[in-house]
Image 1: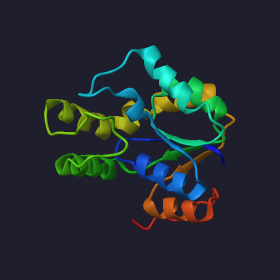
Image 2: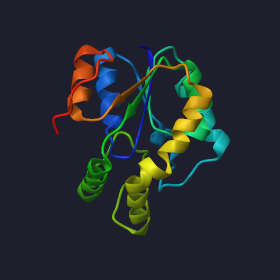
Image 3: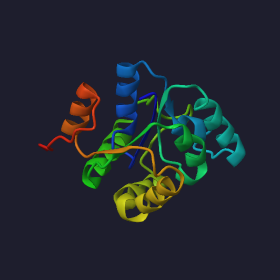
Image 4: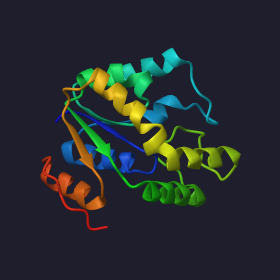
Length: 178
């Protein structure tokens, strides 16, 4: 495994898993949110973002976390040798997003000048998190299947499965104990 794409809901653990894989496999980690967002949560020009992603996934080895399916799968998936879907339950994702926003600590997976705060936009974001599996995941999965159906895809649902994967770096399913 030299080029790994990690997908999942906000709060599913994509960034945490990416950092752990990066350390374990000595691979650079690409956080798509840091490439996408400008300070103050301003969206970049579409081609500017694609140029950043193209450059980030040009090397022979990386771990890349984030969805941005329609915007970047054509750049990332043809180079990937593994996709990891984090199937974290939505209540867990929702709770993690709420907790990290209340704590408001700097995060290495966010662009400079972007902080999470409890405001109207955040409430919209929480709705996105809650409805991700029903409203957004099917579209991401459809693009994945259209662009990279041959890429091995590993589904991890809980911290026990993630820990076992990191220990063994195999695709053997584990049992959830949460």
